Length: 595
Image (cartoon, rainbow, N blue to C red):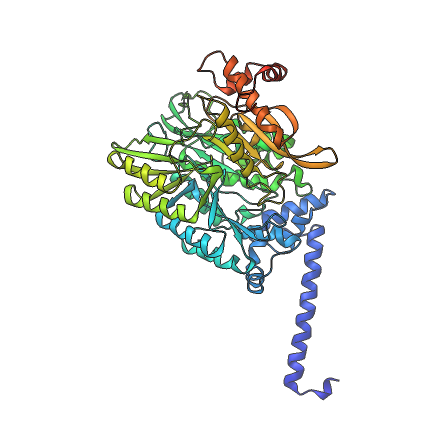
């Protein structure tokens, strides 16, 4: 048949057929490397991930579907697909839902037929113009609001398919990014929210969070992990960052002397925190200079990428690598990746950390800069409208330094407000429908997205949290703040195990029907508040309608039987076994209003 074509046509046809054969060969290679070792050493920016996958297969394991998809084509190389779906007004399907999270877009159906976009805000700090720009983006491309997360971050929700890329571009135009904010990646880097302004802090965490943020963005191997990963820096300030709930926690500490130690500020290295799996990070006994923290974090992440489980996502977090290898063996791998032995704390004279205040994120507080203050705003379960975002930006710019600081408690701070301007700021905040004071119930009220916006959640956590606060405020005169955390599923985004009262949603059988309800845990705490403990199970499968009176009785028992007004709810719970607490609560009368 080629005799029917001229030379130009023949040349084109040969090239066309060669291209088809080349693509077939590439497909065969991709299929082979996804299921078995390629036989050669992996090279390139994804070498660490590919080598780990090859070792898993060589050991007789089978890669999970997510690992196979990442191996076939890295999610960060799928931008054209993201753009193409947006132009077609389509949402991703199947494995593409997972892969699209690498670009910060979460398709949250069936809860909502829309995207959620999660950002990356190192140390949780924005400028006023960025806050204003995000408000505009939420209005133009989302639902006109944002949610503050428990990683001092923001999420914009209700994004139509066709608006997804425009939203991402709007975020990038503000000097921010959503890259790697979901799926098997390192999440937002958290640091002390009062960094640089805290009277008791030992170290300003802002430069470290910024450096860690850009280290991740510029090292491709940081995107080759078997599961998600969390990093936090605690500078020793008044407001905790819950560093011990992270895979890596850095805790500023002062060394005053000791053989071989130059006095100064160091960071204690903690590893393996994951409270949803009932573990706090453990102390490694390693002290790092501030400039050593980011390189060592990179070494820890690489060690995790090398040894993390690629065959079972339920066991693919850092905790399980350390449990399997042992703490000392894992630290040895970290030192190998770092290229040097790490400094042990043995013999160091270390000053104890000043206590943090888990409710210090609310109210007006003096800064270390004379005559200046930071104001902690209460955001109802972390939600803020675009109009409120613009108002907050205007207040921060007009009366402060234009700096807005998010906290892991789902609220925000406006810093650098002069003494003379505190009153007018409070009035302006009130005009937005917000405030700088809250009841003992609302000061520590934390709730995840819930089933109104998350397909995993078993209850409407944000709605229930607000109703629960209304109920308890009318019936109890609490003089000590109580942290109540409501989480919708086992992912524990609201960290229910570290709340004074932790609630995890569950479907509860009521006759032939299934209703929304919760399992109840009490007596949890975290970080440097001197209250580190996992909450204990108090009640199971409580229908939501029965939950408010159950908690009312428990809190009434606390008020009636605590040893003194100074005894916290955490201490009260720890001073009694669960059976005794149930008995005290059962005998506590409900208020007259409840009756």
